[in-house]
Amino acid sequence: MKPVIICGGVGTKMWPASRQKMPKHFLSLVKGKSLFQLNWAMLRKKYKPEEIFLQTNALQAEIAKGQVTEIVAENIFIEPEMRNQGPATGFAAAMLARKGFGDEPFMLIQSDLLRQDEKAFLHSMEMADEIAQKENVYVTGAMKPAQIVEGVDYLVKGDLITEEDGIKLWRIVDYVDRTEKEKIRSLMDSGNLLLHWNHTAMTPNNLLAMFKKYKPEWSQPTTENYAELPKGGIEEVTARVYKDGGAVAMEFPFEIVDFGTWESVAKYLGSDENNNYIRSKKYTAVIGLTDIVVVETEDALLICKKDQSGRVGEVVEKLKAEGKTELV
Image (cartoon, rainbow, N blue to C red; front, side, top):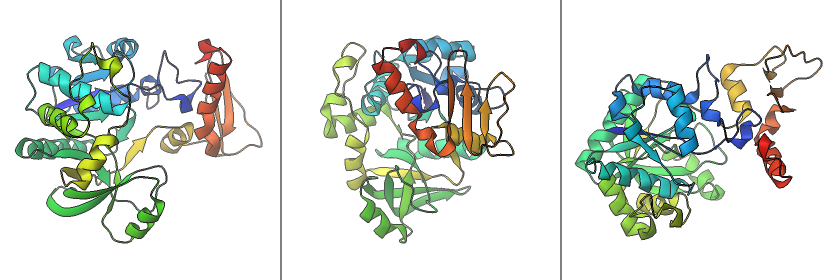
């Protein structure tokens, strides 16, 4: 198995700390460490530096090397520009294939997630590796939903392949887009519904062949032609693969924390006695206010209600429209 850590976005919902020059996954968030550093440390419990790959842009590659000095420079894949998840996944597969790893499974590791049981997650990688070597299947991650979650896609499970240490491997028979709310509600009580949690795993050669079948435009990405590839989410391919029975899902028995907003950070790290989250180098006193976020940087200050932190990206869009690029 070849782990490929992917870093691409900025995380505008975590402005003003998260910026183009220092995206959220490189911020010091948890005990003085960044999410990138924590994910690297997790993978190092099983893999050597030369076995771990990184896919990102040129700027973030330099930040990554500054935070983790043992990164192997030859293992960094530089995306010429952002083309979304579909082309990016094909690019990772193509780069690995050119290095001679076309028949060895790889897994994409999102750098802005924390997996609460690292040992179990590393074992799930072994399970994905084993089935991806034996079968030409697309492997992804999933979790059992306790309730309907908005803004997330779903998978419908079929037969159980195996279970090890609480991790279940399921055949997938259908894909349910987050917009299909009536279908989600109708399947919720069936016990067959899974929350989709990505973590793409497959051999590079099989993934590129899958792209050639369902989305030929993405099947031969190179550094030279990457900017010409049509943008799109990988679901443009995998939604059809799921329905055609060509996919398997790892059902994770542990929590995955998605650091998408300041509210999610506050939930993970905890808040003060008034349920406020404050990130500032200055002594900051908040009186008579509850459930708010305060984030200060050298040139900007954010104050908002926790449940409105998902709108922080609107500030970034406004700054861009006003030409204040130094603040984004």
